[in-house]
Image (tube, rainbow, N blue to C red; front, side, top):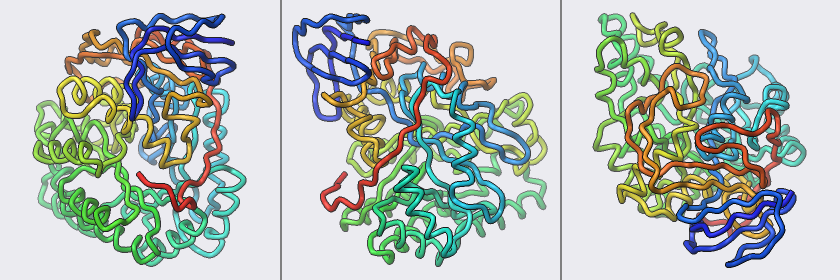
Length: 466
């Protein structure tokens, strides 16, 4: 199949020019001006902005928490992704049985995704315990299965102790992989949760108060120091929420340490006042870490501008407000944690970031497309527009005005955290490997067309720098 995109404003992380793109058999073959190519699909992008397909490096599809299951599976979740301009996701696999091998959940998740996903995908490994067997399994996970990134948690039931985190990061560094970390101080959180419930303080606001910003800051500082002791093991902080945590990341990067950070739209655009909403509406925003102050919002935008935060992902994990979230109506500790966002990410960051002058359009591409592809071994297959790259393209109408409401979105959930946001600029076409899969807010592709991508290691290359 041959696809030609004509007359668009082509924007990458470093370039901005008018031109044409020729895609053949799913691969970008040529970029130029006035290309004369035969095509099966011809797209006139005059007056539109043409960017690489988005890469969301943090989703949770088919996640089971015990009390509830995330409402999006790999079909509904990737349909939502496609309609919002994301053409590749990397899903954080949920925990498996106690003591399981690293490939246990990988096999489970292949079963979830195959035949369902409509965009290309990969998985982050999940670490529930550390012993010599687990460390030895890393080689097969990376070299055979194509999984070079692994997530450890500093909180929750399967949290990894500091000494095990050190052992794990040492081994993974030697193999060229990267450790992603959910950084919160488990003991302090549990102490505060228990105290608040005992005192009858069980409204959604106390979810945020039980996870104060210092809990994130302390844990980030601690894991940065552990990564340093592991010989500057590559470290990726997921869903950064606070100026406190950002300060430690800035200090480490200024010293040359291999620390990378991700934040999410909710931590840029929503604040802790949401927990005070009437009629239990605050339950919609129970996520971990919680929403922070407006000052933290601005600090994170500033961190993106200055290059200390490299990625905007979503932590997409949707639960119905009318049912699932109501488990916490009398006790915030019973509420499943998470919110939707995979479809909203690209439109929100374009409108609230680029249009409002918080970031440049090149920075938008960098943090939503290129950097996640580079850090996690997808680049240049994904994350850019260049000859040899996959024909993953999003066309944005910069003049299109859209009011975000749950009714126009495709996630299998009954609310959006961004209800009523007035956006300027919106994806009007998503192309995956040269095939139009979404057009004018509707999915037009085929179920199961998404492909699993074996990712490569990048941190065994001494020249890697971001």
